[in-house]
Amino acid sequence: MDNQSQIAVIILNYNSWQDTVTLVKNLASQQEVALEIIIVDNASPNDSLRSLQEQLDNQAHLHLLSAPGNGGYAKGNNIGLRFGEALHCEYGVILNNDVMLDDPLLLKKLSSVSSKYPNCGFIAPIMENQAGDEIKHIKKIPGYWKDLSESSFLSRWLFSKLLSKSIYYDRTNPVEEVAMIPGSFIFFKYALFKQIGYFDETTFLYGEERILAMKCREYHLTSMICTGLAYRHCHGKTISSFHNTKSKMTLVLTSFLYFDKRYRKSGFVRHLVLELGFRYAVVELSVIGKLQSWLPFLSPR
Image (cartoon, rainbow, N blue to C red; front, side, top):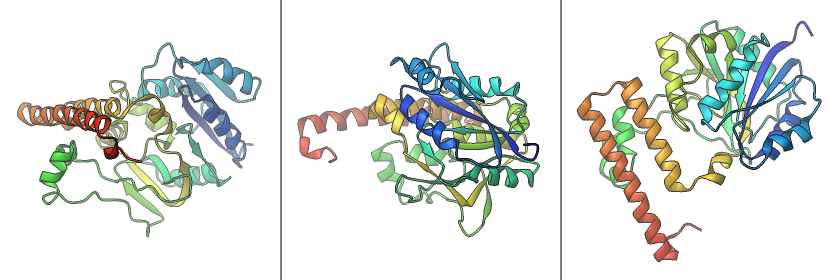
């Protein structure tokens, strides 16, 4: 036990308690680590908390918390992170409840990699879909023109020839330093995450990855992708169940505008142009939605 890595696992639950139970059972297969599992139910309206209590009651090293309200991804995870401080774990990992870990030594391997890089705050394996195919994730923080150009169908058409493609990590390197890692799986040194103040709770959903990357830059910390390790993610399953496309777009744009003003520190004119571009994108999406309702053959099948 003394040689095992002490890891706090934070899982945010919203309505999809069955996925959370499946993940907890999956985590039981992890070897050579001592896990403290912290589940935060984010004020689910479907009585998830009671279901989780019934399914997971009396499990050792499992802590079930209830958020006072649904404050979003960052605020909900911060509840678990702050609770975990008292458990004195050297490492922690934030997991979406719709991920699966197939390698029983995955968390042990990540802790071993992390221990070799004192200034590495965050590590992630390669993200794959349920079929085992890699889901590409950009390694750089998107710039102002990237956000503006990709905000709508019109802007993507106008700027497609002018902007470079997204830069992804290089799988030829076993461990590659990156600016951003996916929010569905974040392995971290607890002391360093606490040092930067955990997540910024201003956003409700989306944008947390880029904000975390900017915080790392401010504190001279690095992030890494372990290209020889992987996990499976049923991407966007929970959010897709409870938000339509327009609603999700609004959440994305609200978070990105906050990031642009608070962290990128764009001036008044640049920020205004970005905001106008984002507002147009929401209107554009509404028009497309109405066209699809009037002309069913335009809807994706």
